[in-house]
Image: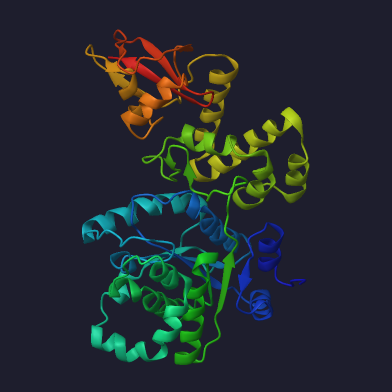
Length: 409
């Protein structure tokens, strides 16, 4: 389909579009007026991760095309839990923890979006502000009649849990009703006409589109992105050592930069389109590079992605550290560092403390495999004591890509 609006042309060219409820209607609306659009994020941790990044970039593209991004924080729905893709009941958080998480998450959004009071400036809203005020009976009367249990049971998020005989609480079962109500509420209060999200949110988005049409006779639209996977088939958002967090407090900028630098050759073009602002003609040139030259494209990807999330200084520092560590055999200043006193630290514990391994047991296995080096020398004793003198540094490495510093104090 050939789109007339700059919004859908931009999203189509860079690979964001998977499904739309009414492509022609949305295209026509975006061509004639500013369209406020939203994506919802629950606040289960102090930071979002790379798996959320495509949705954040959707909001950035919306603003770049001259429309208004609305960031919906699920202060209310976090108290319930989205069952989509989950086999376990979500852990309940305190009100204070949720508010703290939202404040922390906002700092990441401020790098990707321009917030303010203008017609295309981004705003952040919290669904607890309206969901928290709804009485149970009122909610059932107002919204419950528009949802049939038959249809709710047909959604994958519910079906998969039932097929796996995993418990789903009645609380979680209500999540899709509340998400549908969010869309209707934002349409009435913020003029929102578009909800976006990952492909796993399609059912929830369609519920909101239908609810708004039934209750208010207003036409709203839904758009989802394809499931973003890496070339090896694994989901975005995870690395060997865990989640790739967007906030600096949850993951050092060097590790964030390395995540992009270490991507599969086959992912370079796709990731440049989705996660950077580089022009498309430059991306076509970079993804065509072969052999050792593809590493140059990966460095550009790492720099551009890190600039967006952490700032230009963090990207430059990470690249300099990588260059010094790998090319010069030195100790880059931006490497993850632990400080130890005169008592020192055991080799296995140091691997875990630096984030190379998730546990001391895993560290022992890696050491036994010969994958761990101290000052570029392989060692096979997890109990080895590392006790650098005050001001002295030792370099610890796991494989060719993980490096850290143990500093004596």
